[in-house]
Amino acid sequence: MLLALEIGNSNVVVAFFNGDQLRASGRMQADASNTVDDWWTALRHLAEGAGMDLSAVSQVALASVVPDIGTALANMVARHMGQEALRVHANLPLELGLDVKDPDSVGADRICNVVGCRELYGAPAVVVDLGTATTFDVIDAQGHFIGGSIAPGVESSARQLFKAAALLSAVELKVPDTVIGRDTETNLQAGIVFGAVDQIDGMLVRIAAETGWDDMQVVITGGLSHLVAPQLRTTAIHDPDLTVQGLRLIAERCV
Image (cartoon, rainbow, N blue to C red; front, side, top):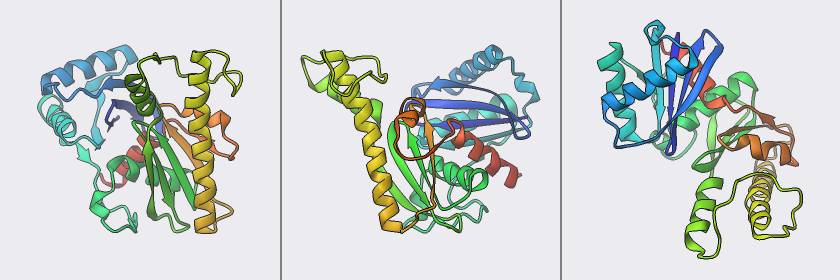
């Protein structure tokens, strides 16, 4: 069984794979103050809750955009599981074609998204990942990453708004019935959610115009993708597990 750990700025996604089958998944808070033993305790609790046996894990792969947490989890795997975790980076033998100015600067999450998208859905394509940041990963017809865009994430932007505006309180992020809100709560929900939707649609129009691609796949993933994907005008595939699926595919190729 493969244990896949996707380490983001807000959460650590934990996924268990038996071959290409996703058996279970969950999230742990990305707390940089956790010790190696803290992480092991959290992982054991998550695995037990999901009915997964950590002793059955034969391979561990991790993709991290938070170096300290990535190192802590790699050390956890070594200490408590007796294994060396495969860590995703730009120099793995993936025939990835990172056609950007500084390939080493490409985040592990974006590498996973590119591999997952090109293998599962084809190319050319754009992956939109709604996490702490909203990233647009652009993949050409050869399956190479040629760059993209990074915007503030939906939740990150909302938290900053609530923090900066004295008279605006945090609201549940959900799709309101109308764009024109009738109270402060629905005003905020409309602006935050539909604003994010229209940002994505608009960026995809610009990417299509700049590349000249009229046949590009669009794949939406990330924590809030379930909220945004159904509202898009752009035809898109919603795959909330794309990043960990990409991590699985990388692990298969780098055994």
